[in-house]
Amino acid sequence: MSIDDRVKQLVIKHAWEMANDSSLSSGDNKLLPEDAGELLSEYFTVFNVDDSSFDFRRYYPNAGIWFLPNCILPRYLKSDKNAPEPLTINMLVACAKAGRWIY
Image (spheres, rainbow, N blue to C red):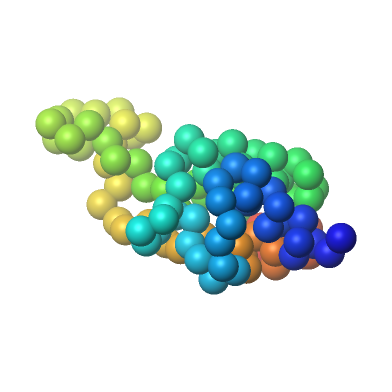
């Protein structure tokens, strides 16, 4: 089985079947951060991808606490004021082939 097919099977295991250019982190059919975290944890282990340069908050920005201003919150609770970048199956396949996170 090719890496492409193995990555797709892992995505189906944690979510549903998607096109290769579908985003896991944005759009109408995005995964919840908890589900994406589980998928990515297994992905990095199964495909032995170095995740040292992977930033989860780039693809799943922190929502923060809506009724409190950022200035009084510790860093890990502050909301990110940016839109999530797309995290596609094509990206997962390319990184699995490279053995490290390249985006």
